[in-house]
Length: 207
Image 1 (cartoon, rainbow, N blue to C red):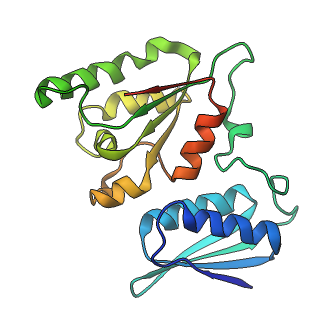
Image 2 (image 1 turned 180 degrees about the vertical axis):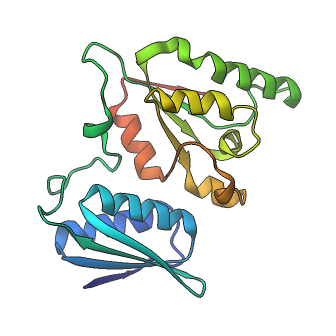
Image 3 (image 1 turned 120 degrees about the horizontal axis):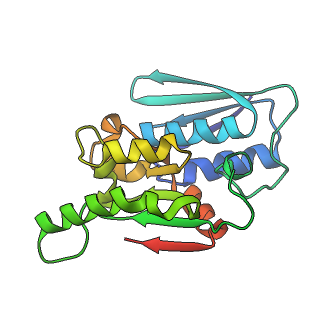
């Protein structure tokens, strides 16, 4: 078994360490020691995408992620840059654009936060008008507050997700605001996922 001590490391270092280890050493089993829930979710999801069966255990203040390679080996080719499993998620026709929208605040614009909150709510409600061009929705910084329980935007985000939209929510940001357990929509993600999505998108819109 290969072991990685990733305690004290911030996103996306634990995922990158795990990625480099399985690509270099090709272990049949790997154990990663972490100290925060967001990293635990990110590393677990990454290992699953590489065809590892994953268990997550808590030992005191530590989280232990253990991955065991399943029959068939690593699902992605050696050195594959895609952390998000784009090949399986991308169901859009070739002629459609891949537009990624990144929302970095819980309100839109500056000047009046109450008005800004109404604007971002209306913006999310109207996103469905983009049709299949809307490929990925990413929340960072205080934008993650739009994905938690009791947020006005939850119903509209759940509808978008039900219709196949991939929603990514920054785990570091959730952890910073102590909201990890309150997230109700989207997939907890890391900066490597976000950068990879930006590379693959035809267009990125920042809000």
